[in-house]
Image (tube, rainbow, N blue to C red; front, side, top):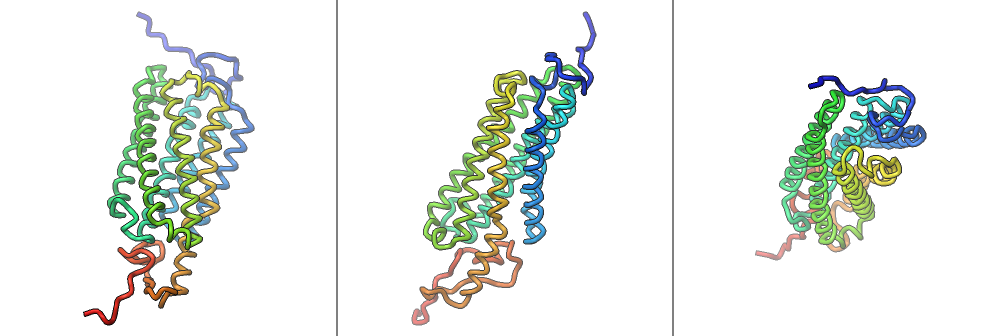
Length: 317
């Protein structure tokens, strides 16, 4: 029985079409550079928002967009070193995990939204909803990271990558299912709070941005699930146009729309509008506000009543 190891060309050898490469094709340099720059600017924008509005939970957006930037830097290096298995493993792992981190920030955005609009708009209590989403997202991230590590290690040793690939696919599909369930809660919340949302422009912008981002994550999740299920030499993973059109572009839209319509900035504007009319609104209902940090929903808005609390009738017994 032969114990000879498979031949791996030098990492930075010029592409010669060898089937032993980490990629099925040499990654193009231009997309790698362009998308690295775009995601880099998006990451900086989210970091600036985190610092300006002193909102620690926006770091999930920073990490997600930063991982996307790192993944496309790895693809740009892959153009120079098309046989580099370390760059290939780094790219696929961080591009798979980036959206999961970003999605945690979207979960928190909706959590704050539910507190603003009131418990009545959500099928679940805010804390219960957030706890479940974050726990399941953590499981998805763990599966994706473990699968990526196993597949990368096996690829380097020339061993079977299927166990790692299967684990990674399980994590991606689980995240896709979670995103779809989240979108159901999202639609219920926005449907029940439609009147309040239409009457408050900052909330309307946050709602629109959240819906767009969630839709893009679903599109990307469907693509990645099918791509990896086909294997490392499947049709989707063997053509660069697919990763550009169905991963890079959707994630640019997803992450940039929440950089432009920053939830922290818009929630801050909403708080300012509430404080301006703190004593009474036009319908005679008392506005709830206090001096607690604005990014803590319970300090920013009513704990249970949402935007307004019913006026107490002084004539009641």
